Image (cartoon, rainbow, N blue to C red):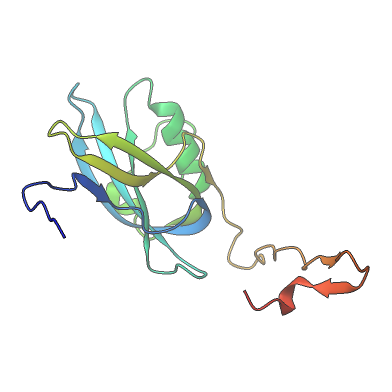
Length: 160
């Protein structure tokens, strides 16, 4: 067997959940600035229910530039914050808020040449979660399928 200890796998994989839409909680907001000097808030999104509860879904950013204001409006509407007129919002106002967030894997190469894999949120990947007293829609019931011998098979009874 030959092993090359000088070679390195220059890939970091930070994808912790599969692509999909999840009820997420904004666990942390880190204020900062873009290279252009615009205010930016980085949001740490954590899955709030289901199989992946507690896992980090993604980091996402809101940029408060002229161009970025439309996306901030989408996010604020999804978490129930005001989206019209002049408002005063602090990063702490977002922490603990929940909404549905769509995540998908993305890959890029860092300036050091390392391949980074992580989940990202599409531009319009936020939508409002039902109010606490509104039930969350249940998934559709399992479909019964017929096999080639025309006998009914319940997909819930398949062991894999």
